[in-house]
Image 1 (cartoon, rainbow, N blue to C red):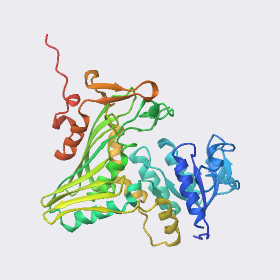
Image 2 (image 1 turned 90 degrees about the vertical axis):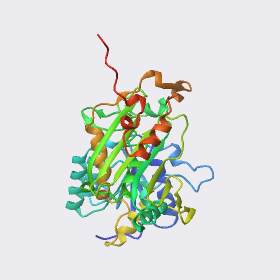
Image 3 (image 1 turned 90 degrees about the horizontal axis):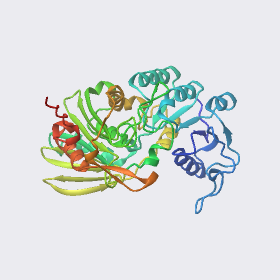
Image 4 (image 1 turned 120 degrees about the vertical axis):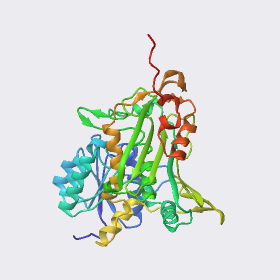
Length: 396
């Protein structure tokens, strides 16, 4: 495969999270590492903030010589780039990534990978068929702190690992779920979307905990148990527990919500017989506590698009987040997809805070119950979360 000195990059889906990818490409272009050849979005970019200089930033996100296309097919017919970045709705990932790979492009695909385990298998087939690379945008797979935690677990410094837990207590407002037709949906027009707390906002917590536990591939997962709930008036889950039994016997448990009183940093906590380590993956910081003492490790993070571009130059290089290494996470997503619809949290356990589109629900004591899931390696019902307990039957 020939590799150009300055690979042509196209970003698909630019009027939302895709703008962050445009900023990355702009930085790479300034360093002579890549150039933005095209943007793809149903809405034109001409005359928008994307084509205007940002305050305090070196020029527009979309330069004048980058072409706009309304859809990916139009771009691939006319001028296939070297790399396609896909920042599009979950249910579009498989068809768009497959089209780009078959057109000869390498792909950076935003998380979650696809909308089902069957789709994951289909995408792996396309990667093998085409010989092109597909990196998935689980940013924590580029984190030096996550690398350090994985090495710490493997070294035995923590002793025998007893629990690997993840806790995410975030906030999402009404506006978040009103931003698009697919937001907060399980199915849209008969197609799986699976846009819940486990699979989208706090997907990094789940994927990172699995990686630290040594579970990345589908075959690394023995079973997945999920308990899905919602306080927002949506189809999907916004407050959920996940318990994964890995093939090697380890348990990974996550307590996740976007119905907290306030957003706190998401963490992955590993407890062992000789110590404990807490990864704050958003900040790339790792706290370690063992009989040897306490220390904090702060690291940088390897950008996944840069990693993909470097891998194009070296056929022997492994991607930091190859699509195959998201198989364990996809087993979790598939369990969420196949589970019964989320149960509503009882109204007496929910308080709404704020007004209008800025309002958000707060589930009573949800932070403590999410922590209990991670600590004990059991789901909401087993740890006693009141919204997960069986509803008493009425007496005659």
